[in-house]
Length: 458
Image: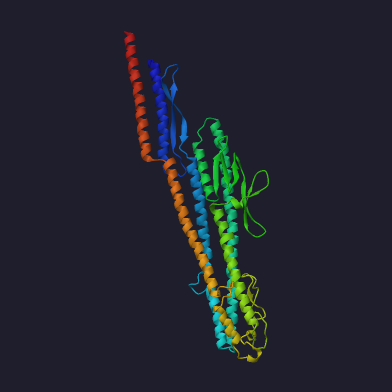
C-alpha cells in the first residue's frame, strides 16, 4: 500500500470514529430522555481492491431494541393500569357504605326495627307512630339514593370509557402516521431511530388505555393490535368506540376504515378500559343485585307482617312499602304517608287501639332470616359491606402486585435498551483513542510524504 492509500485509510478511520463519537454523545445526552433507545454505530471493514485489507465504513445506527421485552412492558403496563383504575373506582363505591358516622344504610335498618320496638311499647303514641313512618321512609330513601349514586357512577364510568377510547384513537392515528414517516425515511437511506423512539413511546401510552400487542409486518412496519383486533396497520388506523347493549352492558367496538365494526369486548384484558368495564359491569352490578335483594326481602317481609295487623282506625291488609321489586323503586307506600293511624300495631281487631302484638312481630323480624331465607337484614347488609370491602382490598392488592410487575418489566427494558453512562464513557474513550490513532496515522503519512519529496528534490 502506498502513502496515498495510507492517507485514505486514515481518512476513513477519522470519519467512522467521528460518527461513532457522535452516536455515543447522543446516547449520553439522552440518558434521561423517556422512551429513548440506546444507539450503536455500525462499523464495517471496507475491502480495498483485491487485497485482504481495507478501511472502515460507518454504515449507520442500530437501535438496541428488544421486541420481546417491549411486549412484556406493554402487557405489564396494561394490567397495572387496569388494576389501578378498578381500585380507584371501587373506592367511590366503598365510600357509600361508610356507617361510622351513623348516616349509612346500616343505621337506617337498625332505626327501622328500633322504631317497631318503640311502637310495641307505646302503640297509641302518635309520636311513636310518626317515628315508624319516618324511619321506614328513611330506609327506603337511603336505598334509592344509594342505588342512584351507583348508577350515576356507572354512567360516569361509561362516559369516561368513551373519553379513554377517544384518546386511544388519537394515539393510534399518530402511530400510523409515524409508520409512513419511518418508511419514507428508510426508503431514502435516512435514519429513522428518533421516529421509532417516538412511535414506541406512543405505543407505551396506548398500552395504559387498552391492552396492546405489536409486531412488524413484511415491510418492517409496526402493526398494533388492541383487544385482540388490528388497530394500526401500515399508515392506516382504525378507531375504538364505546357503547352499550340491550342489557346496558358496556361494549367496546373496533371500527375499521373499511368494513363493519367488530365487537372486541370479550378480548379486552388490560388498560383503563378494562378496569372501567370490570367495575361498572361486574363489581357495581353485583352490589346493585344485593341491594335489590335486601330491599325486596326486607320490604316484602315487613309488608307481609304489617298486612296481618290492624291500625287504630281498624284498617288491615295494608303494605308499609311499595315498589319492593328493586332498591331503586322501594318507597313508603302512598297510603301510609301522613297516616300514622294506619300503622298496624295490633294483631287483631279486638286489640285496637292499644294492642301491640303485631308491632312486636314486626320488631322480631330483625332477628329472623328474612333475606335469602338464611340471613337477617343486619347480617345481609353486613355481608354486602364485607363483599365490597373484599373487592376493594383485592383490587388494591392486585394493583400493588401489577405495579411491581410493571416496574420489573421496565427495569428489564432499561437494562437492555437504556443508556448506561459508564458503558458510554468507555465507548467515548475507545472511539476517541481510535480517532487519535487515525490522526496520528495521517501525521505519520504526511511526515513520510514530506521526507519522500525532500529526497526526490535532491
